[in-house]
Image 1 (cartoon, rainbow, N blue to C red):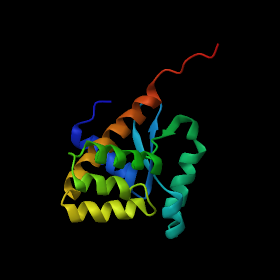
Image 2: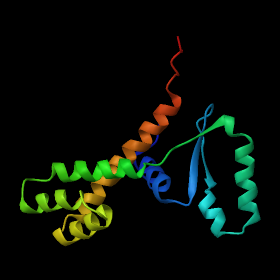
Image 3: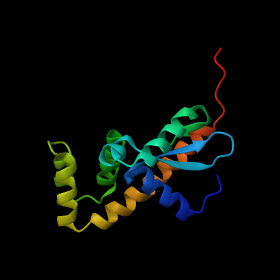
Length: 146
């Protein structure tokens, strides 16, 4: 797809953090947003429910761009920590992400260490790459089963 870096960034942010699900039309590659079930549970807007129903009825033409899973996010955290320079702070982060409340502890600690912005930039770039891979996956030709 011929998106600008800003368009990929926006799509990645929306796929991972919005109240919508994103689908791509398999033929014309148009991306649409559909209210998520969670959003609909919080909102009684009948138009939003009808909009979702319309896309569910023609789902064979669209494929969902999947957001990164929690497991994928945890792998990102591990990669980020692994890439930090050797230090006591790095060793502390390695131990924190092995324990309970790993996400919460990690976020608190990177703020304390002053690497929160570095983490956010790292995560943004990886999420953009994730969405690009998702879109490419949708349009890769399926292998014939022998």
